[in-house]
Amino acid sequence: MAGHPGSGDPLSPRAKLAVTAGKAAAAVSRVAGRGSGSVIGGKVALRLDPELLGRLATHLDVVLVSATNGKTTTTRLIAEALRASGPVVSNALGANMPAGITSALAGGSDARFGVIEVDEKYLAGVARDVSPKAIALLNLSRDQLDRAGETRMLAEKWREGLAGSKAVIIANADDPLVVWAASSSPNVVWVAAGQAWKDDAWSCPACGGVMQRPGDDWYCGECGFRRPQPSWALSGDYVLDPHGSAWPIHLQLPGRANKANAASSAAVAAVFGVPPQVALERMYQVQAVAGRYDVVQFQGRDLRLLLAKNPAGWLETFSLIDPPPAPVLLSVNARGADGTDTSWLWDVDYTRLAGHPIFVLGDRKLDLAVRLEVAGLDFRVCETLDEAVQLAPPGRIEAIANYTAFQDLRRRVGN
Image (tube, rainbow, N blue to C red; front, side, top):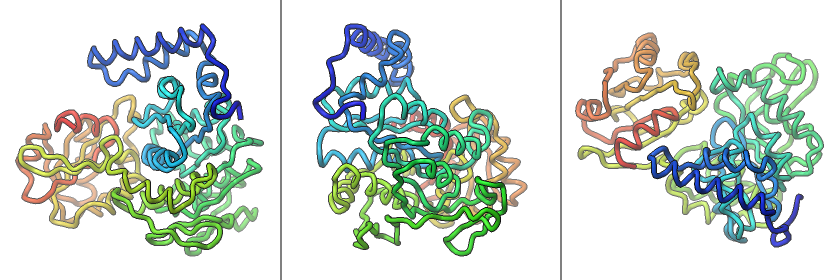
């Protein structure tokens, strides 16, 4: 650890100046209507003091959370659990690169714990800067192909960056890429959290051989790389701890994926001395995460806002929605924050939406329309959310969108 609660040295004059300047830049950005300002504030602060991130974390017990899907939700669940033991600072809105993380920690001078979501590409660097006590690795799958590249390259970067780490690694035993990445660390807690999307893990990350997947198990028949024995597990509506005790999961968040997030969060909380029962009870308080899963009123209709950014995320989201004939609205953009490559649309099994009235919008609505036509689905292309809502038949509308399209929807409905 770089330090422990209450032991951090006061910030240097330069660091204090950097924090003040960053907060001022963030405030100007907010007044100008350009969002929360956390990213620009962090960039300004880091320009003035490049080592500020590490300095701000000195007095904190830090946990980092990284994955392709579920980072923001799991970060929120862990933060709620750790508040049982003291004040928490967290980048709760998902600004997960060094600038956004720096902004978040700048507001945590009185905190005991730092619960930090980290973009997959930046995990190793942030871990070097903040000396975390724990790192949670949930999953790796294809996402933002133009920016992040191939999943095995990311797994290799994690493996190299975490080799010899003093942190306790809490890792998903059911994802071969995560297991490969975490196996370079001397202290790993394995969690059987499940893996619904398997299309990025059919070849062995160790040798390239074909992965064998009997039931929930997996192994490489060529080099012997195999699923480790988990000490924590998701089992239906329960978390099984290392002693074999079963703790009920009561969440307001829907779906199997969030139960898996809760299981990993309980394992993380235990590293910090919070018992599973206490951790899981506190997680019930989370109703929505940065707008995800919110049900909002718009033009007299109920809309449920669901975020799905990549094939794995869409697969999980399809399992959440109301059955046919519930109307479904799909919105896809391809801006910088989404990744400009939309080829991933062809990896999503949209036939699961058969029987639903479907309405398509967003910057890439025509790309999505071609994909749905090939899938043999009936749909309507709409110019605006207002048009889609007016055309939708009765019933709660399930609105599924990728990152910037989701933010567009939130702004339009005033959420």
